[in-house]
Length: 71
View (cartoon, rainbow, N blue to C red):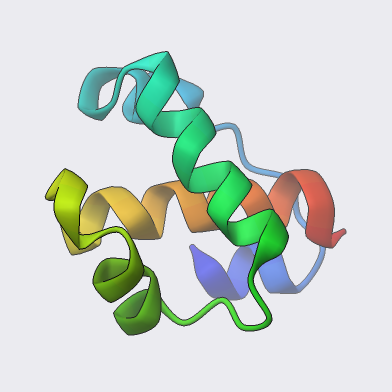
């Protein structure tokens, strides 16, 4: 999916993200990616560790972030 998004194709993952995370969590992760210098998942997991997001949840929101803000 990341490769598809990086090539400029838009993906709508909202249905999947909505099943995994509530609106507050989605917004928190999106705000994190807006303000970070790198989109590293390992760093995001470390920075957001108190909320216990899974790597998969962070990855889904990062892909959404790239769709919305990266293209």
